[in-house]
Length: 106
Image (tube, rainbow, N blue to C red; front, top):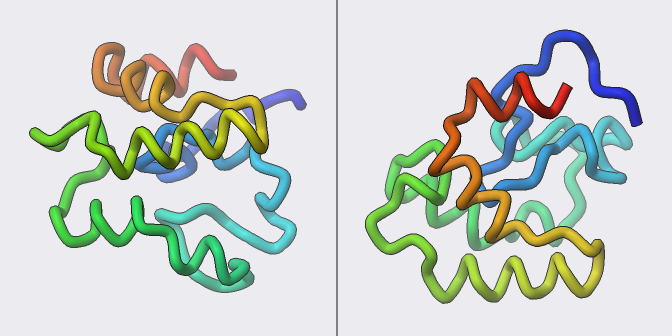
């Protein structure tokens, strides 16, 4: 999938998933940082999002507990289901920065 010219940083989920690459994006999900309309039950119950909402961080990598057991479990599930290592993506956000990642992922 070709990425759009301008990507809103809100489309990079706290766990490291690029929402645009997700099969549910705009079908009808708009990304976990934007709203809950159209999300499936699993997305609405996301423990990663609930955690970062509570701790008031934008991304998991900014938390002092990163990588926590919750993030490790989430990543393991995503590797198995989607061949996507969200833990590595979150580490990349932490070390590279959101702006650079958004530019690299175009």
